[in-house]
Length: 269
Image (cartoon, rainbow, N blue to C red; front, side, top):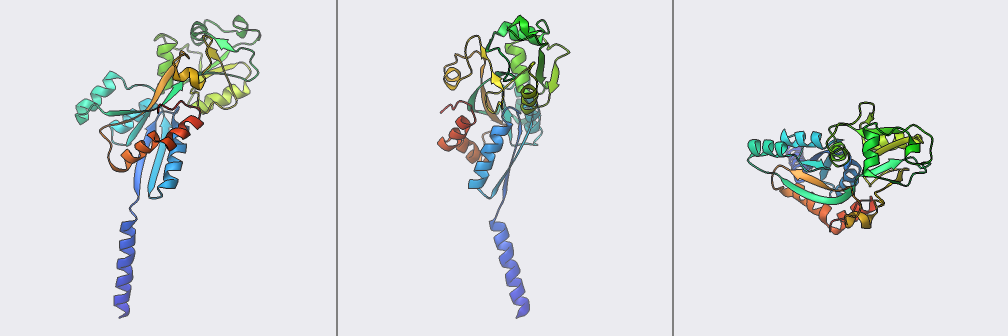
């Protein structure tokens, strides 16, 4: 009788264990989107305790290679995928992939809160990052040598800046490189002569410059008045199913988009 009872208990435990099926989503890619996706994932997991979501940054390029090689379910991308990347997906998976726009962003220019500059032009930005403009007094009143920072070349933000500001030219060799947006923000916060660039969301205690007279406000971004607007997106190899679809649908929902807005991005819906 005792043996039968033990067997029944074991069967009950096994049944309960199989009923609690834990599902996993792996997301990799854009550092610009990392903090936002961490928050979205935390809220979603709180409401869906059987789901575990793992988010890793590293840049849009890193995220692309992760989904290409089956190491992630979703790629976070702060730029469109390039034609050669799409060709890799098409050749390998016979699919063009699926992109979901989840927010509108402004590539923002960060300076220290003590900087007297309020506005900067695209031409001046290009001059700084090609090392043709090296002193702040050539733009404003501060008599300091400009200390510019940029992102890693795996970053979608790096490529956006290179394309839209530098017209495809290479960054000056002396520009300091930081791994993430947070790293750049930390440098700008402590250095009165620093300048950096990144997302409008989560910009810390930095001053956001106007570009060509337009501030990166929600209204200016929505109406494309701010000159450096872009879309943030999630990319999957094929049409998502199950929990992955449910998670993306939730991000697009009223609740998910409120989190997007609260973080400083512009909701698309």
